[in-house]
Amino acid sequence: MKHTFASTYKQDGGPVYLDCNATSPIEPKVRDAVIQWMSDELGNAGSRTHEYGLRAKRAVQQAREQVAAVVEAAGDEIIFTSGATESNNLASLGLAVFGEETNRRHIISTAIEHKAVLEPLEALEARGFSVTLVRPDKNGLISADSIKDALRPDTLLVSVMHANNETGSIQPLREIADILDDDGVYFHVDAAQGYGKDLEPLRSKRIDLISISGHKIYGPLGVGALVARRRGFKRPPLKPLAYGGGQERGLRPGTLPVPLIVGLGVAAETALKELAARQERCRVIRKEALAALEPLGIRTHSAPDHTLSHVLNFSVPGIDSEAIMVTLKDVAAVSNGSACTSQSYSPSHVLEAMGLPKEAISGAIRVSWSHLTPDVDWPLLAARIETLR
Image (cartoon, rainbow, N blue to C red; front, side, top):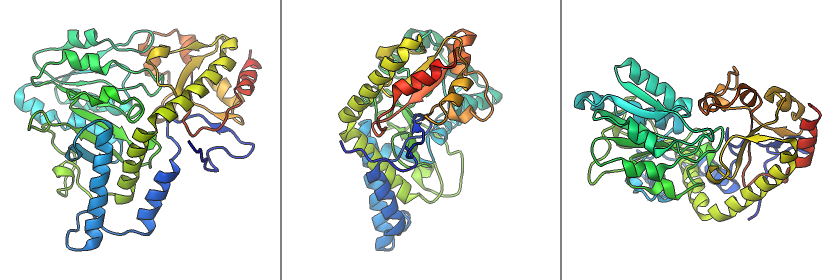
């Protein structure tokens, strides 16, 4: 696979970018498709009276099919959004009216979800819903049995992320799907981190709703999707969160951003075609990272067999994460948690839910790379961290 790196991804003599879970570099072919539709094409996909609009509509439809193919859904089950945060909100808040009408006001989720799931659930609690947050084990894994034990006759929704954004831990979606029966319980998965990287779990027909983000799969920022699978002939009973047009089956009004949607489609199709090569590249990088870092006595915060191949969350005994980030500033761009909470640092709610000791939480560093990542001088990173002892 040919690797191309933008000048901002690794500047000459500058730090290598190792924060792909926050946002990923854009695939060159995706970038080219977006630019083409911004510069050489024109048309509102809702304009049906001329060829410009029809071309835009066809491009959007092709992107629906490309996005759907990754999870083996139908093209008309794709609702384009601004990203996984909006998709998560639509999946939970959009079911509220149905829950109130059917007297199903109980929701099950996990204590390690992204804030884009947890905060909408807090809003539902303010409306009279009850929320059960299941806690993970020490490796950040949720057990299917804990979900089963939390089910109640009035449960409306189970929402479990695909892979954790901080630790990379992959949750047992197939096992959870197996314990959910076919009555009124809807199953939502925030797949921002795992879509296009771990295929089979998201192809379960028992998963009703899947949230997707473009900029986590080497696509453009500002676009995503919600997969809303039909059960038989019935679509999930979602209500819109905003009004003002009939776009996206009335669930998401506004002019469709055709260039971004085209880019998301290309990113999805490319992820499907290049999955094996991408995973192999990421596994090689992981092996190199561990070989250099393990002599430091690092503590890793996930189970190796249940972790995305491009994520490593670790701490070094006795060293604070802030000190590590400062000493690596000119070598590598790394993180100590979710980008959504990094401006005002507080201890990771994910690591706290896992029951890790305070020292491990305060020292935790997240390193996340991609198939586009150039060679990393891992021994240099390790040597820099060693100077902090």
